[in-house]
Amino acid sequence: LEARRDIELAAGFVSQGATATLAIVSIANYLAVYIKGQSDVNSCSVISGNVDGAAWQYYATTSGPKCDTTSETKTIENAVERELKWMQENGYDSACFKMDHGGTWEGHLKIAFNGKPIASDTQCNSLKYIDL
Image 1 (spheres, rainbow, N blue to C red):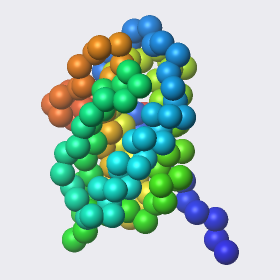
Image 2: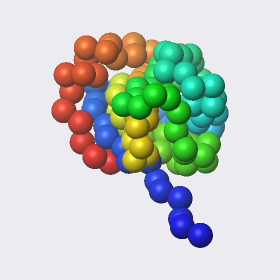
Image 3: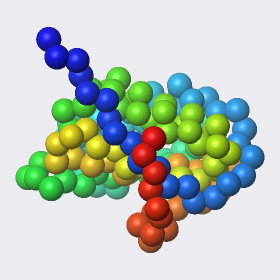
Image 4: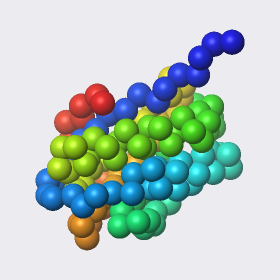
């Protein structure tokens, strides 16, 4: 049996500021369920909300006919957890992330803490992304 592939991540930071201790596992689990739910219903729609002090927005894009991913919820959760840890370790309170699992799906997640606004699409599109 072939091992499941991790999601490749790219990050672009919008602003730096002190980050409080984040409930990383809780936030990652919550967001993974929403992201996988969007995939399960084949939706590229924008969804957003707040959880444990994090404001977030997510949508998917695709180069194929369907807006879904073969990623399992736990694989998505691991990717989001890595993103949040990266933010905390580097002192970012607002960031944009791109997630790629090797198919036609690409997930776009924006996260902000400390009452910062979520980045605009223009801000995210103008960032230089780094691989995580």
